[in-house]
Image (cartoon, rainbow, N blue to C red; front, side):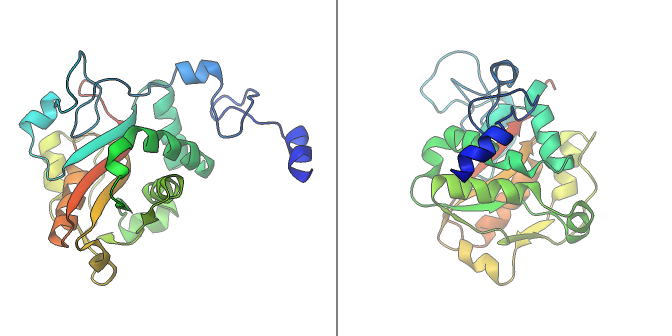
Length: 238
C-alpha cells in the first residue's frame, strides 16, 4: 500500500530525460533508441561491436595487435550518445541510482563470463582521488553487478598504490606507461583472489591500459582466470 502510494506521488521517470515511464530504473522509448547497446557479434576480448557474422571468438583490430592479459571481455554499451551521458552522470553527477540499471545491462552483456562462480572486483581509485570524488563509480557498479548476478563482490581486493595522471587525451602508448605497476593486490584482502575466477569491473574501457594493470595484479595474486566487464566501450574512432 505504501509503495503504491509512493508510485502515485512520485511516478517512475526515465533515467535520463525524466519523462514518465512504466517501471523505475528504466529508459523511455526515445532514450532507449538513443542508447547504443552492444548486440550481435562482438570482440571476445573487449566486447566492442563487430560487423558481420562469426562463431563468437573474433577479435577487433585493437585486441589483435595489443596483448591482453585477461581471458575474455564484454561491454554493455558504446561510449556515445545517451550512453555517454549516463556514464558521465554516474561518474561526475552523483547519479548513484544509475548503477542498478547499468549493472543489469552489464550482466546481460557478460553472459557466460559470470558462470563458475567468479568474484566481482572493481578497478580501484587512488586514495587521494577517492577522497576528492567521495566514491568509486566502479565499486558501485561491481556491487550492483554482484547483486544482480548473485555473486560475491570483493570491493577492496585491489589497490592503486601509485597516484597516476588522468588518462584523458593521452594516446594508447602513454596510457599503458601511465598505469604500469600502479595497481596491485591488497596485502591482506588480495589473498581472496587466489585460485578464483575474477571479473574486473569498470565504467569505461578505452585502450584497456587500466584493465591490463588490474588483470596482471589479479594474476600475480594467483587468480585462475580473469575477465573484464565495462559499462561502456570507447570506439576506436571515437
